[in-house]
Image (cartoon, rainbow, N blue to C red; front, side):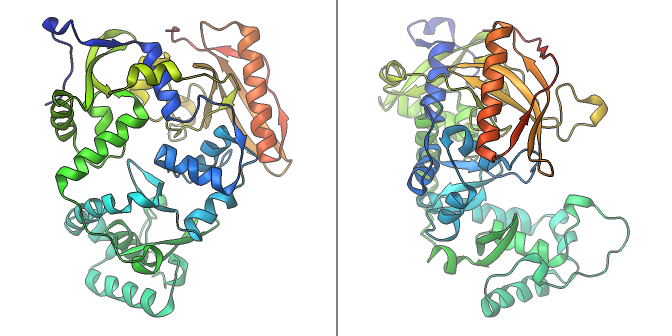
Length: 412
């Protein structure tokens, strides 16, 4: 059962203010300090600090996982991340709430996800349809090919002639479906990427022997602790949805018990536009918040940045109503196909609709929108600085739009 509201008799519960929650979250997302110079060591340190980085295929500006590093490091190169996913194996690719690059010492906890995927996908009509009528034979063919031939991509398998209308993104061949099934269930792993194409291999050749599956109780405790370490203070639902490894019911039960035992703090969470919500915080949340020193470097955040991805929390803590509109029909878009928020200090001051024009070597800002509560001059300066910084990171020139517009949501 979710904890949704603070009971009237619980007035002794400490209140985590919006400002405190923002600062804890910014620190947990690695956005409270000035960008450091990127090195392989700093890239993997950031993966470990964040826990995971979401991977996305859209390349309108740059792929989202690389943009997450660009926001936090200067001089970042995609090869620095590839070193850790393909050579040192300090990180691996799998699913959290979406496809992600994950710190490798968390692999043991993914054994639960592998088991759940086997049960779910094995009964999925959607997956069976893509695997085809002879799905057992197809799975066996893929296993045998990987075992005998080594790392392979989808293109290394024959593709049958299309029958009927293509389904676009989900127009998978049976062998592609088999590779994805075996990857989701942990039997194979991503060995490397060729461009953005996955190269698969037998999991043991990538990760070594699969670790023992921990008890479910241990998984719940781990997931809650790791979430609170990075979120600072959150609702049970937000805690459960950090890595999407447990349910909100499990999160709520564990947090209530841990708070009773003095391991974490039960708190009230101030949120913009609504009554305080019941939640939990790391036991040292007051000291942790007091230690946060904010950095005012203007930086653009990817649509799937850790700070951005929980849209309701973003609105309630930052008064920033954000929607990723790449999948919205063009006529219904408000801000643009690929819009990135601008962060400076603890404020989201603007959003830019932008794209990389690689033929001309230009980062093109199509439109700029400034948030209320920030002067036009300050917002414009931050927007320009953030765009110039990203253009430099990507090795592109910069083209700026006409007069920026104003967004409508009020400031906190």
